[in-house]
Image 1 (tube, rainbow, N blue to C red):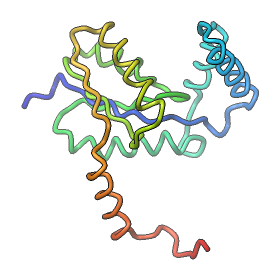
Image 2 (cartoon, rainbow, N blue to C red):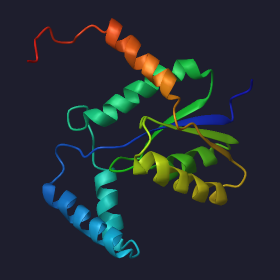
Image 3 (cartoon, rainbow, N blue to C red):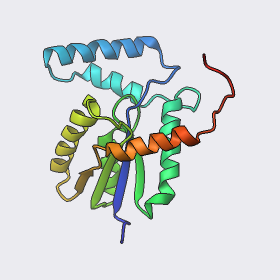
Length: 177
């Protein structure tokens, strides 16, 4: 199968870097929560604060979550037989899902499969926000076939976790109790 014009976006939640000033985070959260409560439009100030957070310089020490998602992607890449692979974040990190799609659209992809690390049902990001964003992106890019590889089969995931429990090697040989 020719996968050269097909891509996968691995979507993680995203986290705040440890070294970002608290006043930036608090300012963003205050404005964001107020907008959500009132149902208002996103303001320029909210966009600027979100951009500051998303584009904050990250290192493995300041953002181990982002490093972890990129490490997962590096393990997935050889298994995807030539698909273009990108990472994206629902919030707090760059690129956003839309940003990753915009880049892939410039590369003339015809199909994008979105998969998230948010596994179980009930989360607003995976169950509501990502599908809404993908509907908007399919309007923005009608020539791209968007597929959302979610929800996960719970039998497969339960088998994965069970196998992990039975076979894992602890990183630390300490008793947590």
